[in-house]
Structure formats: structure tokens, C-alpha cells
Picture 1: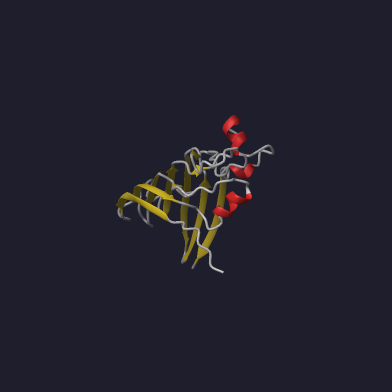
Picture 2: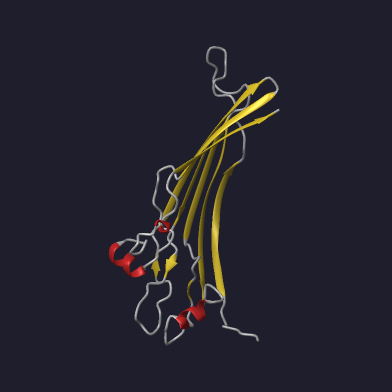
Length: 203
């Protein structure tokens, strides 16, 4: 059996990027994207979902799709030295084989639908708060004869920002600002600050 819900979507926008290719000690990039995603349904099952939730009228007008993120910005900076490079102190290079990498991302809020008792649901008329995350990575190489030892530490979500990534109860969120529902589900937020360490050797 073939079914057609006559859905469609339109996505349009633009991106601006500035890039510094790897060179003497540093490289980096910065970018900004503006986009608009509109259509009838965000998934193949959305029409069925509205019917199962008891809405008497199924919406047919265009609305912002679930992945419509109007503004995004990203920046990356990498500082690095090779063997025998960097400042000299007492005849040695204390920072040789070192690398510092900083990544930053920002995005405006995704849309969501606030539950209501209206005959026709107001699809994706509200927005999540904006999100931001900064990650920091530090690497140091050591040479022992023909062997190379590399130590690395990465801090994810450096500033421990609690980004809202899911709203479990839209009524509670709009009235109290709590996205986790009555049980305060921690999955409503992005992962807290965490650190990974690694140690490797090659010869």
C-alpha cells in the first residue's frame, strides 16, 4: 500500500568561513552559518503522531522544522611546536613537541512545540535557549632514543555550561524553566565538564 502525506521541506542559507592553514606555530578557523529550514512535517511519522495525540485537525501549513537552527558559529585555534622549536631556556627547548588546541561552538535554539488544548497544534513556535561549548586539548611529546612518547589531556565543556538539549515537559519548562520534567531528568542537559587522558608510544 502506498501512502503520501504530501509533505515537503525547503532549506536555505549561507556560510562564511575564514581559515588559517597550518603554518609557523599556529593555525585556526572561524565560521558562521545562517539557515532556515521550513516544511510541512519534520518526519514521516509526524502526521500520525498528531492524530494519535488527539488533535482534531492535522496541520498542513509550513512550519519551522525540528532541525531549524537559525545561527551557528564555530572557532578553532591550534598552537603547536615541532621537535627543536620554541623558546630556548638554558640551552633546551622546554616547549618542543607541545600543542594546545581550543575549540568553541555556539548555536541559537532549536524550535519545539508547546503542548496545548487547541484544536490545531502550534508547531515549533517556541525555541530552546542558545547553546555554547568550549573544549581544550593539550599535548606534549617526549623523545627517548628512537621512541616517541605522547601525553594528551582533553577537557570537554571547559566552562561546565549546562546546555538544554531536550525538554521533557514543555508545560513545566515554560512555567518554571525546568526542562527535565517532574523527575528533573539529567538527560535534559548536555554532558557536564569531563576530562580524558591518554598516553601513547611509537617507535
